Length: 289
Image (cartoon, rainbow, N blue to C red; front, side):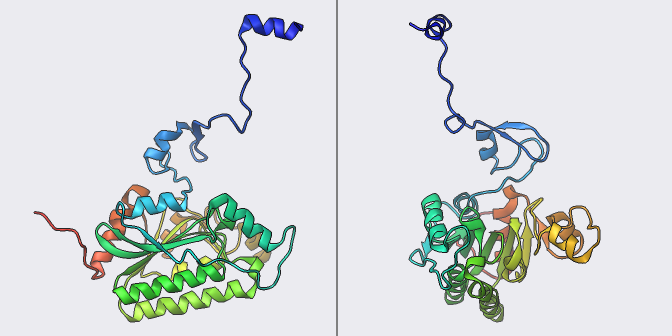
């Protein structure tokens, strides 16, 4: 028996889990620095119990937050990206698609479907930032257009929840064309007097913010969400000027009239439902006095 084993016998020392194996029971808030038990954070819709900071949220959790229970039905799951220009940087585009599919179990960065929000029939589109940074490609553009067409057919509202770094560079012009494609489709929704609510979450950047994200009849944002086109460093280098503090945060945009309201996560579902009803979409819920 070695000396180390001899000591371990008396100290009853147990092997420590690796960093990957160790359970992550505590979450540190990047805003106030407080440590919170992860179940407490999840219970409050992924917000800090101490200061209310809004952590990023998965697309699935977002759907569960907004859609009435057991009402969400996903569409267009068969659509998947191709490699139109055979793009290669450090990895091939095809390889990146395969890796993100294994990571998320999805073929695109967008989930689209139909649900009820507070009893109101709604076409719901949610970006998944975990899939290539929620980037906009041909598939995402097509899914949004199809969601618009379903809203036109069923005469209901459309809600798009953006969480994206912008257009997908691996598809070049094909991705940039989705900005125009989705904008034209949303114009037809406006012509039919059907509401489109755009919810901006952290982050909403690039070609997404430069197109459909800012075309909503109502533009909502979560507290503290980063919203803009280019990064702050790029803008500073381009214009050679000091930038206002927090100029790409939801609060700054609201102050300067670029968005309509900031809504805390626990109020989102009711706010969206109320806006849809005020826009003339009927609720399926029975009103009880």
